[in-house]
Image (tube, rainbow over all chains, first blue to last red; front, side, top):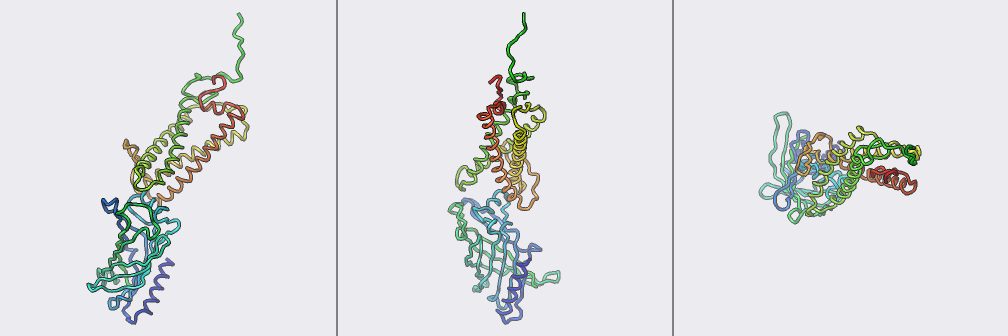
Length: 193
Length: 204
């Protein structure tokens, strides 16, 4: 909760100083309604896709349709909520061979900048910290839509994809040559504050 | 003619056959002996298998085989231990050895209690790892043990930590238990170990 407030305050502060446009708005990612998800897939032996998710996370973003380059995003993931629908596998993932959650229970993403592509999609750059290692990553973002909801709120939603090389974050357990990367899909809907 | 005047042994005559299945006053019967050594062997083997199998790489053929055997034998040991408790309750234990000091008897009772409690805790916690997601445990494909408790948050992690540390504790107590038996056998030179080998001084 504290982290959420801190992140929101930081986002608010940066948003006000970074943009002159008064329509910049701050959003809280709607985890209460579970209209957001962090999914991943990893190749299994080169024979199929193994899907999983992180069920618990929180985040905020500030976004202005007139000035998207000023967008900020901050997400904190509870790595212990990893879920691949298999208890023994989840236990292994949380252990020392993979996420080592007893030492690194959280992963974070803090954006550093956003650039628009010609086709209206965007590239969101930021620092991703996983297993105690921080690396710059780029997320390909598409806006799905925004507008009023039927219950008095205003929402904006995005979909982002990126690939993570597991060895970059200290995860070197050999899952075979086809499984060196995890493909992440981030579905995010924020409620405007 | 005078009646038999052969010298009697110091031990009371056993009230059951010398090589019986059931316990007598002076030794454990073959059922108890088999259960004891059978479980001991299985427990040490499972401990070694457990440590080894979790060190394997994903491409090792035993990566799947090891845990499959470990789970299946674990379930069978659980059933054996239930049988053993029933047998223990249904049959008498041999009379405590007279030369055992009070602290030795107390220590033995505590150690045996720890072993029973520890073993059941290890097996139940292991079961709670594998069934945390609602899956059953397959025993060599013969039958499945269904899940029961699945609602504990991070169940597989908590059960996993308990399973490992309880197993280490059980092995430590078992080694102490074994060393104590050897002490009784070689230093005190009493019947403690012989009894669990279905022998006593009168017939060893």
